Amino acid sequence: MKVRKDYLEALEKLKSDVLRMGELAKAAAKNAIDALVNHDKELAVRLLEENSVIDRMEFEIENQCMRLLALQQPMAIDLRTIETSLKIITDFDRISDLAGDIAEIVIQIADQPYAKPLIDIPRISEISQGMLADCLEAFATHRIEKLEDFSARDDIVDALFGQIRRELVAIMIENPRAITSASHLIFIGLHQERIADHACNIAGRIIYMVTGERRKLG
Image (tube, rainbow, N blue to C red; front, side, top):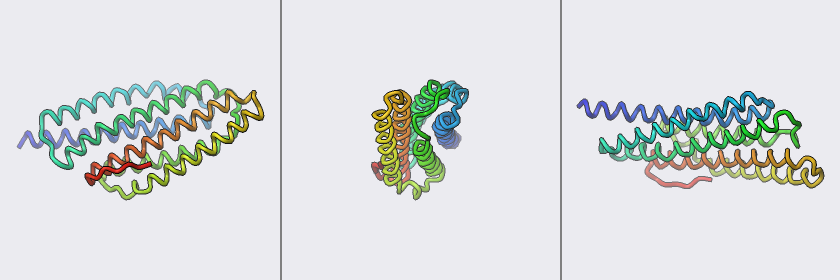
């Protein structure tokens, strides 16, 4: 009986830690764009410093998963929960890395005027933040209804990034002095688009966790 109780407690801790890591990755993605919009180099530097916490959490959660698999014989939904946890923490870590890449660009360009007003990049951030929030809610509650439209949301992100890239390429052609600034913004847009892709990966894994159905979104 105690063995079963310890197992259930360890599984709940795993879920809690995965959610915490996801919240930290989501916050990093938001803070990166906030730093960009507000020309806030201090926030960008702080984000880079805090990313080490997410790196450590990935290692610790991997170990929790391995212990649960080695010491117990989880069945059905529990086994899928452990498998999903192992997969999505990689996506959370990559999201935090992409946020860090954006922060590094912000540190370089925050003191300069940007090549164009920031309209579509914050919009992509808003969409990806919503996707990540819905993933975390679905992981916690096993309610996956809000994940059903992720492919459509990802299409919107792709279209916005395509528009950003076209506009900035046109700016570079018209004004070669804006090439560096415009290139940085293109990379930021690309990193944001990839964050949305990772959200789609996470959503697909959570749908599998809940239903046993493997589905590719985005």
